[in-house]
Image 1 (cartoon, rainbow, N blue to C red):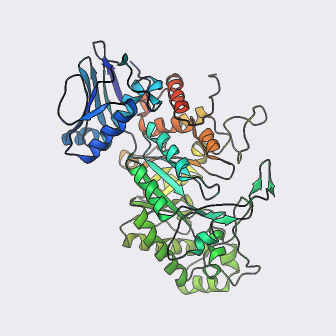
Image 2: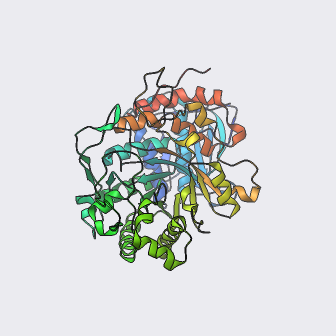
Amino acid sequence: MTPTIIPLPAECRPVRGAGFKLNPRTPVVASAKNAALRRVAQQFAQRLGLEVVGAARPRAVTLRLEPALKKTLGTEGYRLSSRTAGVTIRAATAQGVFYGTQSLRQLLPPETERLGAGAAPGFIVPALEITDRPRFGWRGAMLDPARRFLSVAETKRFIDAMVLHKLNVLHWHLVDDQGWRLEIKKYPKLTEIGAWRTESPRYGNRDEGDGTPHGGFYTQAQIREVVTYAAERFITVVPEIELPGHVASVVAAYPQLGNRDVPGFAPKVVTRWGIQPYTYAPSEPVFGFLADVMAEVVQLFPSKFVHIGGDEAIKDQWQQSAFAQKAIRKLGLKDEHELQSWFIRRVEKILARHGRRLIGWDEIQEGGLSPTATMMVWRDWKWAEFAIAQGNDVVMSPTTHCYLDHYQADPKTTDEPEAIGGHNPLENVYALDPVPPGLKPAQQKHVLGVQGNLWGEYLTSARQVEYMAFPRLSALAEVGWTPPARKDWAGFRARLEPLLKRLELLGVNYRRPDPLR
């Protein structure tokens, strides 16, 4: 038996019996002694209009914590048993139980996604046994409000769609040349100036401006709201604070942080896409600024990791700056690449003082990779092999499979909205194996997981973000969760139809997949 669940469980087998018939009087049993478990129960019961109770009841959906299961199922695995007498979900943690309820959710008709629909008589959970745990601990999606601002409500709706897929990391790209989106109390100009640009590239012609101002930022209260909302759904929000490049919006707000001694220094919040030349100066005031910023960031985001970008830092200004060249000589560095490595290591020490780990794009290895940094691989698989050989952890996010801002079909033959370029169809995303070939078992543990990226340059609205994300993010969710031997493209496509119906009922936009070839 193959249940209509995405991502596909690690193990599932049918058992004898007619299954469990759900009705409006079915209780959801969860001990009141564990607040997290009780919250999971309430979240599941609310959609179906069911009552949550603390004591065991017959013919119930029972949610149970069994810490001993951690040995075999880890912290995210679960067991789901459905019989005529009821449904039981067991796990070592509330998070595991939560994922079990997401599988149970997909065993019910898609119509149950309509809030307030309730548990109509006749909803039957098939008789089966599921034993399940994820392949990877990092199953992520990246949103980019730095380029196109997304409201709190739109971000929450995206989180809700992530929940359905058992995704557990929201990488929030909050800083770039085109906008700074995070309120920092000590530096108000970051949002007074850095959060606003005069225009954006015009749709259909990226070299012309649209004449429309664009901007926005999240207050610290709104950041906490989103982080709490995600955490209640077992999603960790990892902030990205770009450095040393992609910082034109910062230098526009505080010019003293830039390389002021270079020709033509005139920073502003950038109104075009592409890589920009502005970088931080390698100066002590800059590190003081970054220490202050990170002190506020870690208070807002309890995630173990803080993403520092590190990508596409053009070295032109450092090459032209007498101050930067003097720093290279004084520090005994070979070139600007080693200066970047030194810069990133300084920031890593700032984060370490707060008990946080640094993660950055694969350019952080230029000039030398810190032995304690985690690398997010986007360009070439060789950088994953390089990092793993040194004992560093990696998150796989290659452009070949994980860039969801690329075209889903050939724009010359199909009516696709404008995208940044590239071609990344659904089947290609599903075909990804994030583990580089040839790794020894001891090395494979350094692959923390996989992530899909939704860069915002050409995603002009939340609706278009969703259109580009789904169902490709559905495919990537299965890549991150399901054992490779269980993956099956034709089976995934068959299971996709009810999932798309769920997304529709949840108000999530998506692209209708191309017919199977």
